[in-house]
Image (cartoon, rainbow, N blue to C red; front, side, top):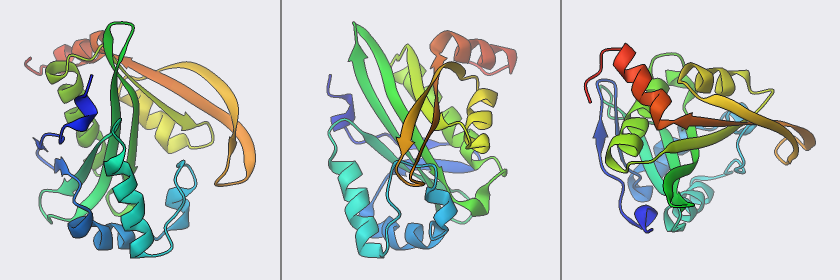
Length: 194
């Protein structure tokens, strides 16, 4: 399957728009938003030291044939406030999103940007791509991440210890899955049309 080789579609919500990441347009502003070292503690990425380092990192994401990468843009300010990376693939005849990774600027925490971006991606994955499930993970000490995932309907399927190279110590990683069935049931309860 070549899903990730395609340019990701534009997904528009009330608060955010997900659009293809544009390194030349996005790097400088995203570098400023992400200067806080604490925002990198729980990622598998190294914090860029300069705009040029960030450009190289973003280009690496875009050149990875297994990834689709969106920029999360605030609809009011038109400012880049986050990124979403997904890894669509086939797994034993089923379409899955093997990993979903988000980074959200602190300036928009708890303002609905992350939730809406996730909902747009989930709708795309389950309704357009016909994925059966979305998988993701979070370091157990990263309370904000796993609580957010659980509030979106993800179910913890296991926990295992890995080395967190960013902080230099081994720690537990929680692995999660969100199934199409769970997502569609949540949407039905919320009164969202198919």
